[in-house]
Length: 164
Image (tube, rainbow, N blue to C red; front, side, top):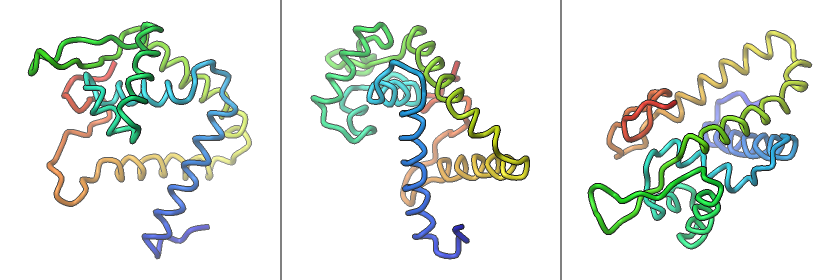
């Protein structure tokens, strides 16, 4: 059990545990969506309309990799390319309703895969998990030093549009 006295060790354990958790869910979820597409689709949903270069930076992949992933998402009808209203030469990628549905179904499949594990936990542990989610949300909303404040409400995207 981590006591939180050493913030650096806490950060390391958080990273290791969350990565293991993500891999577990990806392995056990009954979904046909490849993990790279799932991750990119979730990024686009979070970012709102975005340039491929910004998606690549957010997902820490090369631009050619992001372009390939976006093309696969376009082929499935989950995202569409549109002209950037600020720069007519540039293209933005935006999630479609079909993409939102695919993302929702994939998340539901992941949740279904976790339900048997959650069912084995006692109410106190479930309560601690709930508190942990609240704490993780606070970490995600905390601004890094030197960053401008943004709206981090869970019901809005970075572009200010409400999530559906």
